[in-house]
Length: 299
Ligand code: NAD
Ligand code: MG
View: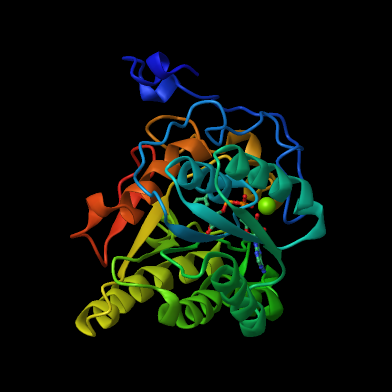
């Protein structure tokens, strides 16, 4: 997409593919190459405006989906970026993200492993400090979900795993990162429209996303009242076309139809919210959640 096209008067509802999509289920965690249609992470379209020059960022789940689009945007805004991701099958996605970070002239670092372990979270932070000397932006974005039709279908291990990956990791990462974050830093947590309107097939996931909202608001109070100068905010995406979807939602052919736009968002459409919250333009914003939902209401 050209710069001119970005400024066009096109109806946003028609800007990206609409369902129905082909049924192409994937195994968790899913990969970008098996997505049909392919997702847009701003590879061709995102243009930085120097909003994050000299910053050092960590993005969990930065290999694919929303995290990948945020990584590309941050790098083009001038930030060095460490991406964390889970699995060997995502190596190609991670390497592709690193390629875009480096093409933007920034340093890209990848760390693979399970963030439900506090030790691994500490390793992520130590690696960032070793590579960058500081942490200005921490994006807690990785998550697990699985669709289940009934309460009885949810194994206890999956309940516990969902909380461990989605919310315990935020505590571990924020705690380990805080001593390395100078005033003016920013933490951004990915919640979901599910925090407001829980999907009945995603009971544990939706509960973690509500917990993330409360954690975000409260950590903001703690860090600002203690004079740390670290802002804490959240982004609440609506349905976004990422590997999470074909790997965890059986009827993904119709994904995103439940928005006024009648389509899912693309990762590139979510990334600017993270750029804004990380930048000095959001200097007076903390404890907030920014919805990026294609018009789904979150009041
Ligand atoms: P995605 O699959 O591209 O990204 C999620 C990433 O999390 C994966 O790439 C994986 O590497 C990482 N991950 C999963 N489990 C992990 C673990 N145990 N340890 C380390 N890393 C792990 O999907 P996405 O949709 O871009 O998801 C990013 C965030 O957006 C998540 O928090 C998700 O809940 C949120 N979100 C997504 C949607 C949507 O419709 N796609 C909607 C609302 C919120
Ligand atoms: Mg991935």
